[in-house]
Image (cartoon, rainbow over the protein chains, first blue to last red):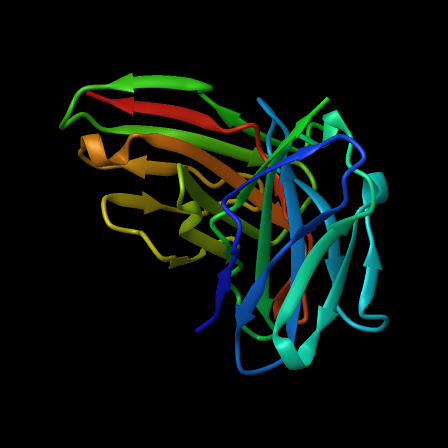
Length: 113
Length: 115
């Protein structure tokens, strides 16, 4: 089985602050990892993904995430957040050969102007 | 491309009623899934399908049925609605590559209220 844990449920930052959202997964094999974002009133969309190769992946809107295999982590980062980054962020894992995708419980980010 | 479409956008049901949530995609994706989103619980997988004629259960399948007669459509049926099924339901589709999932594309969601 696979699982995902997101440590921060609600984060409040001021504009220009740096962001790091934690994500840890559990699976005994190779994984695909995703971060999805849900802006207020909108449906989920992909922010970035890791399948293989460079463990530092860059996504849309200046977001990046680093896959650290030894720590089973895939933390999301952004050096300087904007008010428009206010949204809910979900980490997800798909173990290779395992058809299901498992989502974390989500982190609500509120950016204060 | 319309992507993933869901109908209805909002529905109110009484306990015990049945209904079908519709989901369709025009991207020829093999993999389709249904999730429910509840506050503090993230997205939980209800049922999924890896192709026409093939469905399987997710984490929270009780009270729901699915079928996949075509690649495009993946309806979710609530057999006898209960207040615990009040939620936002999302349908998603993705291409499947070598036994694992690619990026999922989500529909706009259906808000269901069961009284």
